[in-house]
Image 1 (spheres, rainbow over the protein chains, first blue to last red):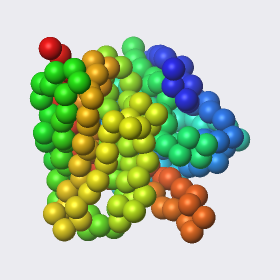
Image 2: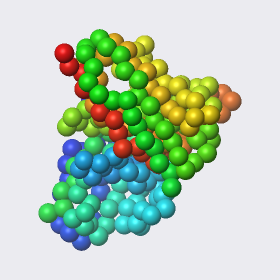
Image 3: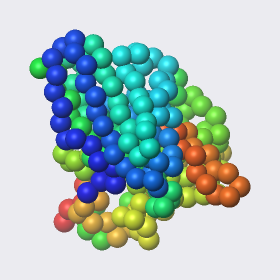
Length: 110
Length: 127
């Protein structure tokens, strides 16, 4: 059971938009920045979004992040087949004094 | 280019010990916090342990407390995870990651994310 809650799977057609949600509590998302990671099959995770809504260099603006209270959302527009991956949210939990992840959301581009 | 290379994985018997290493290049290693994250086969990411840039502050998941010890040698650009009393549920790919994280004088952590990941090192726990 993960500290952060994500929908296990989402799907959409190429070119469409999808949102992936991440729900937490006042001790984690409500108290710290959220990061989002993309994990393609068989590879290490890759940082997509940091500090709630900032994109590292090289990440296209099709990817966006937002946060409200104890929930965060990853948005992906102009879906491509190469976006098929597992997506994880992560943050710090001030009560646990530890990092936490969501259980991951598998994105299928139909 | 920043690179992290994890090593030291392999097969270990239940109750055994193992030490993972992560060697960094292309960055001022002593400026950055580091994290160990693991992923069991077919499962999601699990945060395991973190360490501040100086090594003065260490953090552990409940699953790691008392059995795992994180450390670093900034003179060698190296991060370590010493694991003892390994269990079947510790079998996973272990990733090291460069972490944007600071701590204020009150000990509050400001966390921004893990921006560079190593390729992973696999630990198998089996008799």
